[in-house]
Length: 119
Image 1 (cartoon, rainbow, N blue to C red):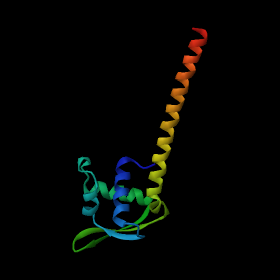
Image 2: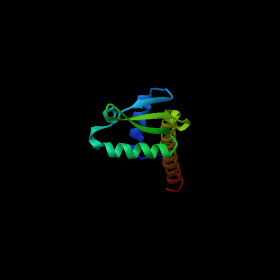
Image 3: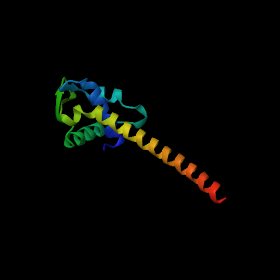
Image 4: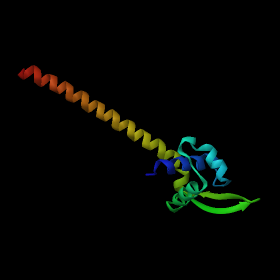
């Protein structure tokens, strides 16, 4: 499971790649898609990208173009399935909440029945 900042950076990378296998991205493009309240900087984004690369989401190559740092990103299988994994995790959470609600309602009804019998 990814940390919040890793999840935000991975979402930005996935959106910038737009379903293609590889893309050329600048740190400014990544920062433009990240929430401003988190105060990301170049070093933080660089370390997060290297961590995601080590986790097997994509291959990362750093380069420079006209004096600006650029990243060449080749998505791997885990990177391609990122959106599906997020949807599946949301479904699992919704299922658990529904199951907890059903359990609470059945416990309440069972309590009323027991109270009616013995009360």
